[in-house]
Image 1 (cartoon, rainbow, N blue to C red):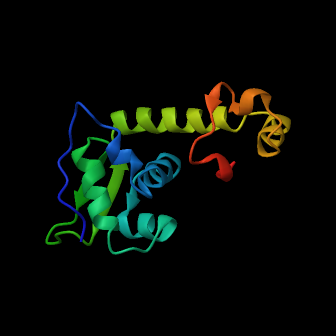
Image 2: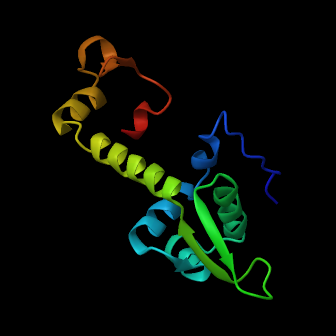
Length: 130
């Protein structure tokens, strides 16, 4: 069971840090309004997915359209205008991160980058994941 979630407008990033949250936003960005079940099938068939949609809804990133007579299982979801803007930023960030020169990455992996730093940052706990 997920821990209770309260959206904090002064600290909005944690909602995006949870697994699959950005994937859900990008799915809705590319597919538009979708059935919940299609989102689940496209991202992950996990019992926590309905709650993840609720968290994104509370953050103002998506709208959940429930079918009459259903509680949490059926319905459609779509990005809000705010959610679309946030997703555009995520996609732009992804594009920027992909532009890092491959030769620089290889130098870092081999330990040959000046001062053992990665583009001015000290090696951190994710160094081995490069």
